[in-house]
Length: 437
Ligand SMILES: NC(=O)c1ccc[n+]([C@@H]2O[C@H](COP(=O)([O-])OP(=O)(O)OC[C@H]3O[C@@H](n4cnc5c(N)ncnc54)[C@H](O)[C@@H]3O)[C@@H](O)[C@H]2O)c1
Image 1 (cartoon, helix red, strand yellow):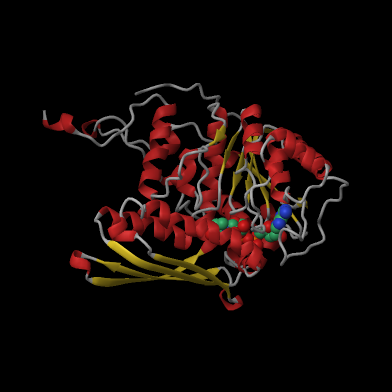
Image 2 (cartoon, protein in one colour):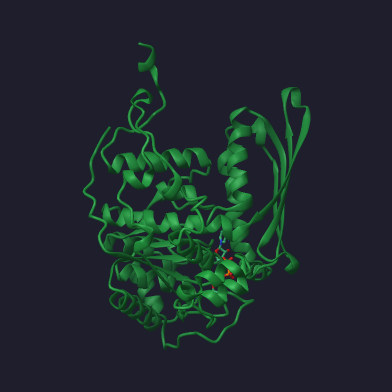
């Protein structure tokens, strides 16, 4: 099947706005500036380093993704954001302690120009944080209007053609779906009535969508994973995606679990624990924020292993995820996995993983790819949930009645086939019988 979508040209500058100017966001921004200056490479970014095979294997057509689909050039990105702390991007990056000071000093003139706008924030939703740079407003609707004004002002002042918003703020407390989330009408009424079912991240998403700006959700917050905002995204013809960047331990899980399952290896238990000492770790030390993260991390294995279809291999497997705040480690997380597996005739074996990872180093290229792909989706007229971007998320959003696809390799195939689809190239099925006719 081939089609060709009409993709609007990639002219002018693209603004990337992040609610939250913390470790992930500043590592992303500083990284792009460093890459522009030629002092680093965009390792981990599919849009910058990935290729895509087109046509038959014998054709040997394998362009870079960025040459195949029209994506913004890194030189055309302009950064901005909101935070509850007044630190500019240089100060915040120093505080986060991810990148070396010597590198940040080199990038300082550009980084210190990026100053956060006052945030929409409420301690009820992130209990371990408090800061001075917070907007005041009578109602949640009024706060959304202030954010819309920020977006418009940022666009004019920086002479931008288009914008994307990517949530890089802290993880909010776990929120259950509520009647106020069921329709746009109910949602808007709830905003006017300051209903607690409307969290700050939902106010950002609402503001972005009203301004026809795509919204990607890097945290496990419910945010756009509700009918009301999906309705708004469709109405405004704007793409949305989420939730929760897939980085360290969950990335490993979605690489390994599909492999074990493909060989019909059984699993009795998977115990995952982490120590981390950054601000994210501090926020997640609060049980209410941890609950959002836990739900997002736990879902992965059930969907990959499908215990109901493979009871002999996965029925009643035990899955536990722990996150422990341990300040000495800063952003350098350590994640351990103990996996109890069994093989032929049920003989037990074990796998141990000790991943000494750097959370924000793994997350930064995801922010870049999402900014570029969400903008591509908008220009290609793709609105609502972008399931093809599941590749980047721990807890991918999908249409109602669909289960999410967590297998990293299926996600990658889906992403690349979507790119082929929008460019009118043949989809690749890997059948390959034609080579043997
Ligand atoms: N680093 C990773 O690998 C990774 C992976 C998946 C998800 N995430 C999520 O990404 C988010 C950012 O992570 P981080 O390590 O940069 O955390 P961080 O604590 O360094 O940065 C978050 C920033 O958001 C700000 N903030 C909180 N609420 C806000 C609001 N309502 N409006 C504006 N700013 C607000 C905080 O003040 C802070 O500066 C977290 O939710 C984290 O769970 C990170």
